[in-house]
Length: 220
Image (cartoon, rainbow, N blue to C red; front, side, top):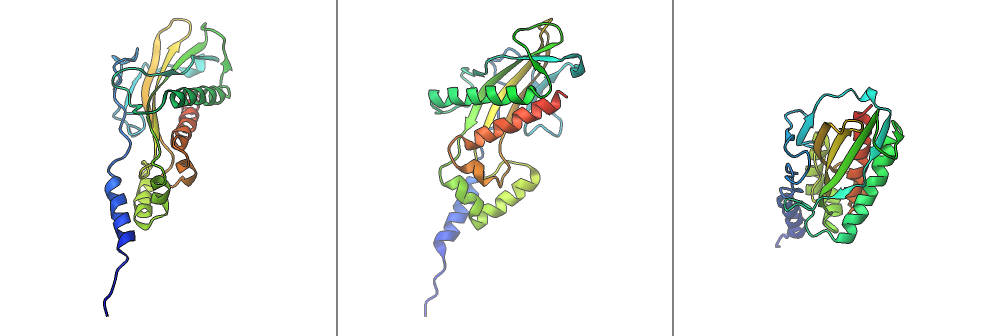
């Protein structure tokens, strides 16, 4: 009697493990930003999510208001927006505007213009990796993908075939126009966040949510 093995599931699992190496690209120190000459590689423990940063070590408690400029879409040749449509770029930038504004409104009064005791914040969408249709969801349910994502979840790293969002944050003193802090960020959902695998931009939006919360906490 011949014995057959379930080769298709094994092959699918092996293929997913090979694809795991193809995580979304890491951000670069985008040369078209106003703060690009200030940005340096981040050597701290949060470097995976904030690979480039600059800080003048400001006292955030000096500021009670915030002016958030309209979120820009980075047009430099080194952008990482890939083939994301113009409509999706505008939609995601608008989503960033609303989420960052809502998060910072819990800490600051929203200002209509620059002035004393005011932070002026410029946010620029620089990169997006969309979810891979079907595969990103299957990778959380398949045995091989589940094992990989278990490790990634513990490490706080990206899940297999899941999207992400990259952006720049530049923070200025609203009275003097001095650059106080700038950083490049990459945000993505938890490796086992199945809900963030449905829809091509679901992971990017989840990353925006996390980024807005992180900035609000940082400025406390």
